[in-house]
Image 1 (cartoon, rainbow, N blue to C red):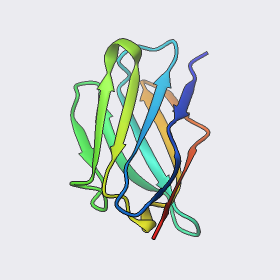
Image 2 (cartoon, one colour; image 1 turned 90 degrees about the vertical axis):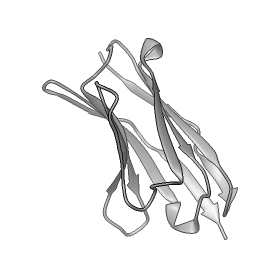
Image 3 (tube, rainbow, N blue to C red; image 1 turned 30 degrees about the vertical axis):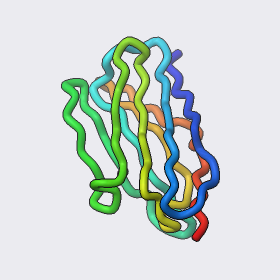
Image 4 (cartoon, rainbow, N blue to C red; image 1 turned 90 degrees about the horizontal axis):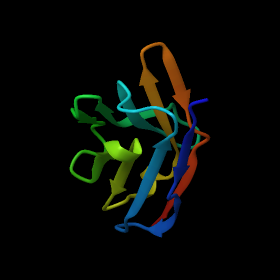
Length: 114
């Protein structure tokens, strides 16, 4: 059974950095993987997505600050988050799409204090 395992959340002060990772088991080069951000009291928003071809798109609020990368050998994606702001606080969910398969991780908490 394909699973997503996230890690790397935590608490930092504004301007700091965190790196999230998401490992997909039992699947190689899925059609797309990415991250959603769920801020308290707000709608979920897309943070970054990488396709199977390696094309990456970023949400407007994180462009220039977050960098997504992938290790195909490990079916793992990473989200390097720099210049963090208090509004980046929330739960970050990894997701995967592959053919008809849709998966989402349990989420990892990121807290940025001012």
